[in-house]
Length: 361
Image (cartoon, rainbow, N blue to C red; front, side):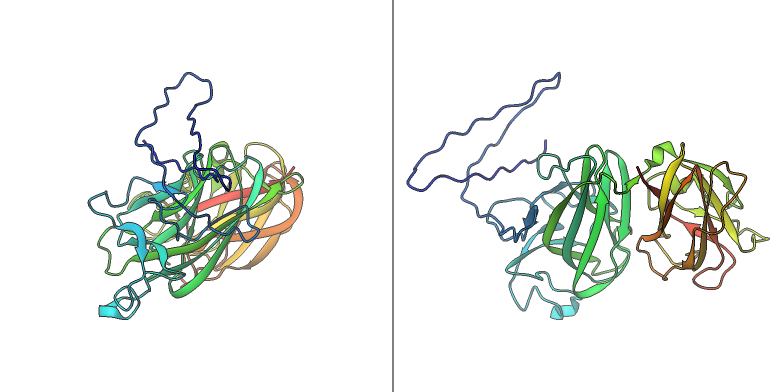
């Protein structure tokens, strides 16, 4: 069972309304239960396609539903927190962040369990496949890398780490919706990793940027494969290259570190499964620590996996767990190669959580 909320307006002067519940034709069984009609208020849209400030009086977490990993009804680690200064604000008995960062209420996750904390559902926020969306919200987090913002398509996920933010910080992400698209928050670190592992979220807005048309789309990871890899650690950990395409930011490709460690540079080559007008490489660094995060990089493309172009892009990634995007002039290619020429801490190895390839039609 999942919660669904529908707002409706009663015309001025009317004292009653007719509520009708129905389901589209199909083989599945649909059940409605615990139907309630309560007074509510709309979050001012401010010109956005969707907006939520968590100030409404109705129950629930705005567009989000329980993701499976959060606290239960008797252990409400995630809840809409109300302002009760000074007890709910930073500084009270060691609190690192405010429980409420806008208005009188914010969505708070307190030292959650590892896993998907909450996510949208089609009945709470429906994304149109092929459309580009911009998601923005303000957040506070006692520590970096505890929580991830997730965009999903069915069971596939792309995650972006939320950095430490002990004062309200704005986060923005643009993505192209696939089938059964959703957004949510995942807790990356285990329960009890440290005190004050809190995330406060508020002032969520979503803008529909329209059909991508001539814009970019991402090749589904399930369609891609690893064509080649220079090195991978399989003796002392699961550092297989295939982990960069499994949709799980907790798994990694790690080059060989068991003695003797493989030296720089390190390469991994992806096969998107067909030829595309490739235009961007998306790199998610290792999430649980900085060890192996790429500093210097080069990106190459090839039509046949044998003849390679001059570098499509070169540069240096920042030392962060946030997803990095490498854009370059679109070119026809079947293969994309990422070469790491340096590591954030000067070590000889490389690690990568996830890789994705974007293209233009």
